[in-house]
Length: 412
Image: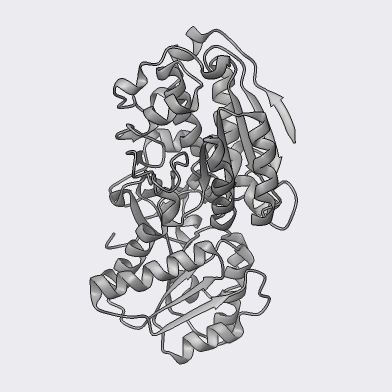
């Protein structure tokens, strides 16, 4: 475990606020925000931080935590939390679900005010299950719909769109906007892959009385995607949902498609790694789209907000971004950290029960990526209208601000 502190300044300095915080808007908190003291006598906020520092996902996931590190900079500049320095306790989960019980045990002993991470639906499910008994406030990057179930996981808050929302948008784009009827699915064998596969199938069935013509599932460490791609091609797939959190898997799938001159319209989970895709035919890449946040897209008439542009500028300058600004800006952790700072300051408490009561009443909090709302039962905080589809190749356009933002797909 790595532990460090931000510098504490006067509480007045924090409440005065900076543009990066005030731009996110005020919370809609009710009577739950009337607490006046920190829980259990604690006066220093302690942040549990779960990130893969080692293992095969360490480099790919590092940019995902850039927003959280920028949020720490904002907290430091504005006096910490409740006028005290913030203590950060970093845990290496190695990007593995199997590591989560041991990581959770260490975090429970440290008694953090709230927890950031982990990342990846399988890791998140293992983590929130292990942390549930300690009633620790947590937000992690996992898209499985069940992670936003406030009854099942009352202390976990999902600040990303879930797999059902993602499936609805992807299916609408392929079926309605592009008019495609031979829709296929290829997913990784993981909690995320299973969840979104089932959600796409259900959406096609319930909304369009349709079914996929092919469904392929690959292991996360698969080294050859040719058999899966051949099955999709044999089925005549013209529209494909490609959902994986493994960057190399996307490369291998596209490589197999390029080898057989198979160019379906693709809606993906990710619009990153543009430089790594330079080997592929333009026809393949021009048909590559991905789900994203509406606030992170632009059109001929609409531009991203000043707050988005300011955050993108900071992301571009951060050494951990390493060319993966899209991962950094779509990550939930900046919005989560700023939301927690606001809740703590308004409740004047570090007690998890009071923070939970306030979070359950958040209504329309303006994050950088999207508005966030929760109820006691619904902990999936992103609204359907804030989810859209962007184009991959717009990362080469100047409006993308260095490849971080995306052009919204026509018809969306």
